Length: 283
Image 1 (cartoon, one colour):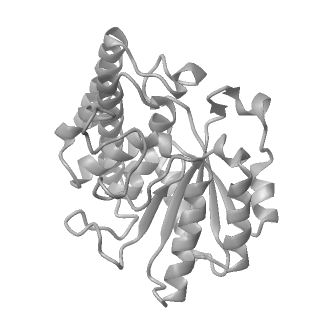
Image 2: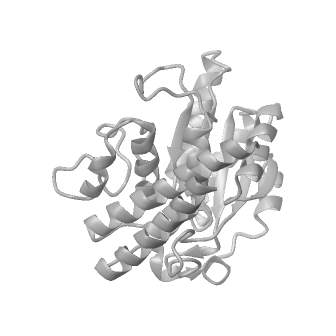
């Protein structure tokens, strides 16, 4: 990846993180930790043209699809969509407010750019597999479907039913990202209900698998390239990431799975992110 692309993606990843902090602070609720760990993937998906999408035509039937299976991380997706031009960035602070179209979990009926309403863990990947199968059935082999799960989410049995389905029907147009940040709402995944070895499980379920640093753009790009070159198998990407990435006091802290920063914490987070953005822009 060239230097200018890296700089552009780094800039958008920080802006996405700023949107996450802005929206959860304003809502006094939400899930910043897993949203922050996924921000680099969102930057790649929406700003490196990894997906065939058009904010001016969000319902294009030939578009690629993205399903946020870990729907509680909507603040991250909303922020990416806003900066990509699907709706005003100024609307992000209305997150979870009464009468706002930006509710705590994605709603495809109210938010431009949302391809599936999600929130009940495990259902997103099931819908994504169905979308991929539908595209195959219709002969639209140029449509790819991407979905993002959490490593806590894959403790759900429904996830593995969807994995079996994807392998059975050779859905090589389906790319499954697993945000492996090691923490879920109750504590470390290793202590609550370990799904390890995730890579071996995916391979056993018929997936082509790659493990990458989920906060490294070059590694994410390699994963996208590997997905596009894989035939007759669904593709799984295990993203080793840092929960709360980008905000010092949130990083690797399970407490920030599902709570909002107070005013003091908001000011610290925004100051850190603004400093990061300035450093990127001046580099």
